[in-house]
Image 1 (cartoon, rainbow, N blue to C red):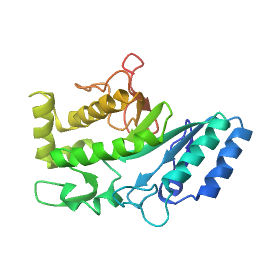
Image 2: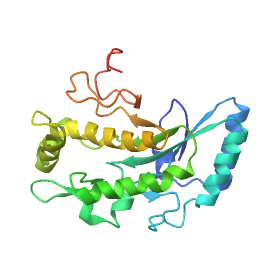
Image 3: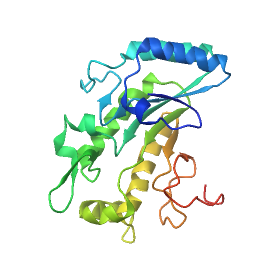
Image 4: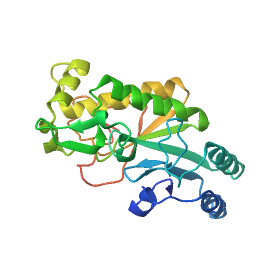
Length: 233
């Protein structure tokens, strides 16, 4: 669940719990190697690896006190900690406790690891998560993931996402544009707390009608899409 800046956590790191002692040793190793960013991916379909006031975490997770200690250690070694709570995809573990927010297609088929952000209470749930953890991380960045939600052809299966995009962004918006609207919504929240939002690049293409805010940091990790021209990002 830890990755150095410039890399994306691979499946082993994203889905396997790393103990407090392992992370202490890793921070010291990063310092020795003169590396100064530590990306902590705390949530995924297989687990919630940080203490939650709603009790989302399994036994294998970090307490908030342990996280505070890790942040202090990283600070002493001049390492920036970038926390990530991935949304609106990769929420399988959290949605086990909130099946009412699981995304359903027009035929009623459930995507158990994706949240239906067209539901107001579901967006409030996501907001509560971010507001719970933001004070724990005093650094400059907050990462909301936003990767691997739906492929281009899949959005048509979810008319509620299209309706939400049109309602919030205008009649010309598509369901895919709604993801960017969600990112911008959380960008406003994060920036109001003095942080800069970071996201993965999955939903961005050169012809996007509704781009994300210019002050969002987009991290490129995959070649699934055509690279964005430098004039766009």
